[in-house]
Image (cartoon, rainbow, N blue to C red; front, side):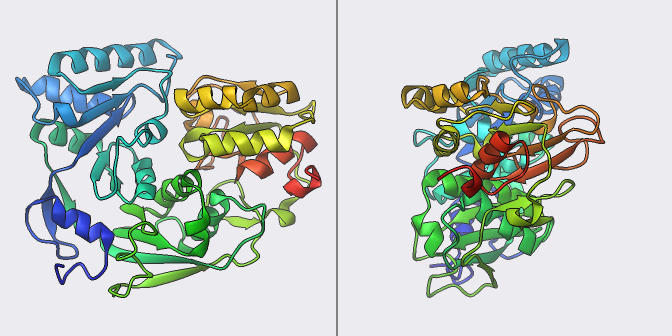
Length: 410
């Protein structure tokens, strides 16, 4: 083992993909990725750069996936034009995967069906590409300029990040999900608290979590500004619990922790849901790349079964991929949600980034299972967004106000 790695899975993966430079912390080095991803927002500037350069071919066309997922089905002529441009570009340069609208959100679809494997290096023009770290892969966000360069050359540069261990200590309340662990971590580190770091996460509760719960944690780690967010529990020779680990470790105490919720304005302004009970809500959104997976549909259906959504609440549910939609339909989850009064949409990012579907009006309050609740993110600047896990969101949809799920589930 390279002595510089010192038990870090993230540095080991970078070392395996090194083209030029060194694996020294803060050194600028060049790497070759296994997968490259862009979507209908971030790909357009990259496509404009490549089209303007007149390149005859792209070295990484067979390693690239381009997604139509954010503002699709196209909500206006600009969105439709973006889809057209990406399709023409993909045909011209022989892009391996053009993932058409309806197939899924990039951070869900890309990590289904073993398309990404442990030990791989993945770059995507979206900060929440960190999601794939749940598989033990190094997955990181890049900008549109870097996307263009990577597609053209097959390489990208990176300032080698310093590892930061995250150990989740203790066993939380039975109502807690991966989302609650992630919110506690963000509250501890703060937004921007892991800038220029690669998180490597482990702990007893992590090893008990489903893969879907792990995806949620790696996804939300982007809110700490981490370069990557690897879960190392399946690669036990690496990470904060390995004997070779020599990097700093932050311990996140979750013993007996109840469900968490983030107040409007920032995902790191987090509290126990018990302390915010009774706040009236107008809309509940379950979906996004954070909580649009099969486990999330199952949990929501379990909370809603035999009950009705409050008449003053709009419940919007968006399965994150065609596979999630299909499996949830066959399992009866979607029927349960519809019977309770929820509305199901096809796979899309939807209201998460304020694109379309479920936009909030002046002064409205929403609970969302997405990853960000910045002012004006889902509509009017006067609207307010609380972030929670699925069980809290479902229970609140029934009661018409923020409640602990045990209030509605016997």
